Image (cartoon, rainbow, N blue to C red; front, side, top):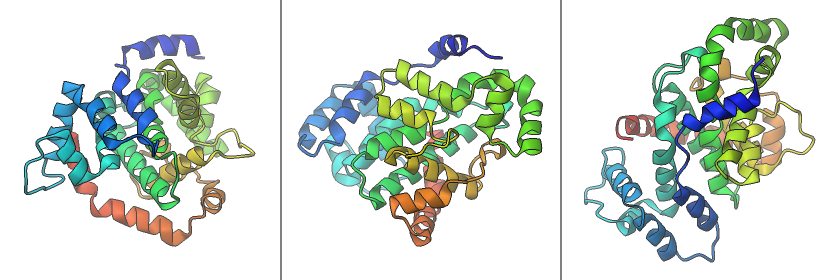
Length: 282
């Protein structure tokens, strides 16, 4: 059985999310905060600014005019998209590697993480949630525990697959049985160690709804639904493709009809290749 303390010690090798991200998340969902304050926050981070402009000028967005400043990026892309791009750039490196213990090729964890984040963001827009950036960030980081668990999975994956197939278990339940801990719980603890809010860390920890919560918090419901949509679309690796047992309940809770879900998935697929093209840039 794995030790949580040892895994958290191992997680120290992952570069923490920059402090500017915490500051952005504190500001961006507050309607009283002027855009100029958020712009200045990004401007004070030269590396963040440079990466943002590199992304904004990429073929993925196809602007005819050059994006030369943070202000231009916000005008052309909108504040929400700019903040999402800053978040994407800040957590990309550890997600891009192959994670063979989980059967994920190079870039696959990045693709399923980014896809889930963008679908979760679209869900939040549809239900007009006031916690949009918590939802986006939780969806993006929900599998951060995979990075640390991966090397331990290499010797245990056959047992885990057997448990999933023989007893109809989801990945997290099989991980708990075989390894004593699952990647979602570990991810929540890593997020807490990075000084993210309790809401964000708890959403990451509970995104599989493995503990059958009586009341599902709205942000957790949105990340669960987005993750289910990624599984149904064939984006997630086979180990991550769950049973979606709370899918109908979550849709009802969020007030989403099947038409809404299909539209979100269709919109994502219409720009999927441009989005995945960012993998070569980030």
